[in-house]
Image (tube, rainbow, N blue to C red):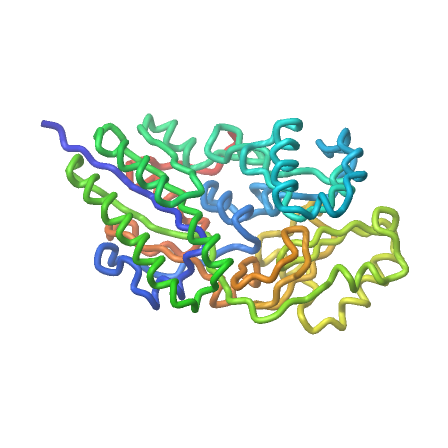
Amino acid sequence: MRKTSITIAIFIDSLGWRLANENGFLRHELPFRGPLATTFGTSSSCIPTILTGVAPREHGHFAPFAYDPEGSPFRKLGWMRYVPKFLADMGCIRQWMGRWVQRQVGLNRNFQLHNTPLQLLPQMNYTDRHALHEPGGINSGLTTLFDDLRDGAIRFEVYELHSGEDTLATAERDLACGDLQFAYISISGLDEFLHARGTTSSAVEKKLAFYENQVRNLLDTARAHYDQVNVAVFSGNGMADVTGECDLMRQVEALPLQLGKDYFAIYDSTIARFWFLNENAERVISNALSGNMDGQWLSDHTLRQWGCDFPDRRYGHRFFLLRPGVLLNPSFMGRTMLAGMHGYDPWHKDSVAFFASNDARMGRPAGLTNLRDVLAASVGVFRLATRSA
């Protein structure tokens, strides 16, 4: 009878090292554990970094939206600027419009409008158009962990659902068949929970215990159908508790400049990204925000250290990053106060990601860029170099 083995890679969004370590998350089941250096940005930059093994400057992902009036897929939707604000601000209407836009433009199912001003859409491009686990899903054309598995003829499945319960239940049913060699499971429910509750809520321990039980049940099923079960649980970043908010939009819009003529700006939850359309706008905005104690301008040197110095500046000419714990509110992501947020300085303690495994051969990866090789090697797949798809 042949020996069967499987690697189960479980990505739990926003389960940072501090939170996992303080709560002893799966400490006994996964003894080989440690902090995992993250990258600048949120899931839009972290997940492609995990899958490609390279920095954002190389894989080409950072944020969903970028200023690109010539390449905008929304150019034919200029009429949306006439939607009354009271309608556009209604959550149910905006969700419906987001789904409608997704179908009209042909974007992937993860597309969301959030609080993006409708009148600005025709000047913006959407950069996360493709499913990352599919061939050709990376913006720069690089291959991913899943391409490595395909090249190695590894039988694998990817589970990416928003509900942690459904994700694990679906994977558990497939594991019971005993045919897979690799399962990649993405759990995003904790991210939503921590945004709403923060990391110090009394409900956090209960939520983590829920996921622990879900993972244990999954592993019990796998061990009943495989001779060897290798497990790695990891995240892309952590979560910081929000301690204050900053209305950068109001400060910038009060300047004697015109959006779309002098500059363009995209306000994420922790970063304001600016494209300057003339020298005067760059000088005025740079000077105005230099005195804002809630954040700082990122230098080219810092962006280079963080792997986010995009040669074409496609995600912005300059970035203004808020200090950890300060929420940019309102922003293009929302207009309500949250309890937790990520996307701050990647070297801050609350940004550090988490890795744990039951397999000593996986070691303790230093950062997100190491995970591709570690996971591929667990099923006997080795690559010589990063290549184009």
